[in-house]
Length: 354
Ligand code: AHM
Ligand code: MG
Image 1 (cartoon, helix red, strand yellow):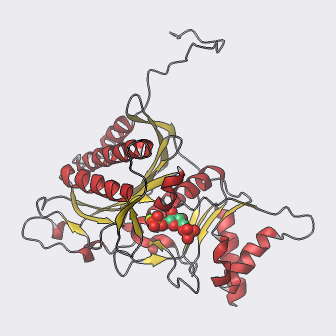
Image 2 (cartoon, protein in one colour):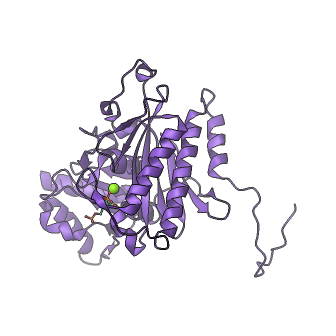
Image 3 (cartoon, protein in one colour):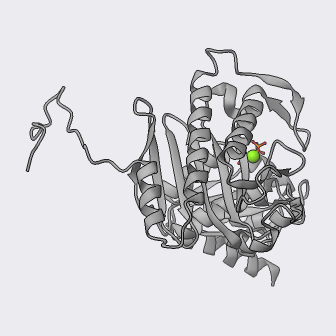
């Protein structure tokens, strides 16, 4: 077998892997496994990939090219928009439109769903939060893009069919794929297909390629880490307070949980995926429907966590993936993470609701 001369791990001699799996290769190999595949999904993913690379590039350079700060506008829900929110959204819309494979796009930054009537035969609908956690941007904290992909039914294909936002008010169980890209020390893309594995890719900046670095990600079944904005505890239901109290005060001989909260869902979720634990943004008295959005924040994350062996429920302990949003920006409470940790949430809920 040929080697590249680094058996001793000598400094300056890289052990070069010349057979790497890029996202492009991975998608092609996945497509081959589905004989009836048309290639449309693969092309859509290529367009998504370009959007992630572009957003990663602008975020890396933000401070240098004056992209930090507010854009002077606010989005659908009155949140101040950052310049990068606007750029991320524009990049995403252009990529989806240009793919020719996207019929409907829902973005957190757009009040209405965008319907691409110029592509009446496009089979896919995409939901996204182009830059989630953007309040952290100027401090250089990791943010991310979250996305979900639905395949539209045949009866709304073609120039005669009329497509509306209602066509995308579907539960997460109907997604064909979901994922997120975290823009951190490096850009990390995590993607999963319906009932498939969860795979993690790292953007290699010089090659400009996402490389498969975390194949078949599996969430540890338990881990004593909780991630929640405890500043909201005055608004929480009694059972939510009781649950977090029990983590911090485990009783005689027990070890209290560690708290980790970045305030950027993608970063908190990525850590939870790798290390285990529980991430929560419960519904509370101030936000009775919760803060996070069902379509493009909760459902895509829920699919990743379930496919990696974890659980994801809302504040009524219903499976997050089964929740049908009432409108495209509908919200939900969320608890997701390691199987045993989320089970503990469910048990506490039922004990207190008896
Ligand atoms: P955004 O979509 O406006 O960026 O808000 C979503 C973010 C999530 O990334 C994060 O989990 C949450 O809001 C943090 O909220 P808070 O600052 O209330 O803790
Ligand atoms: Mg968001």
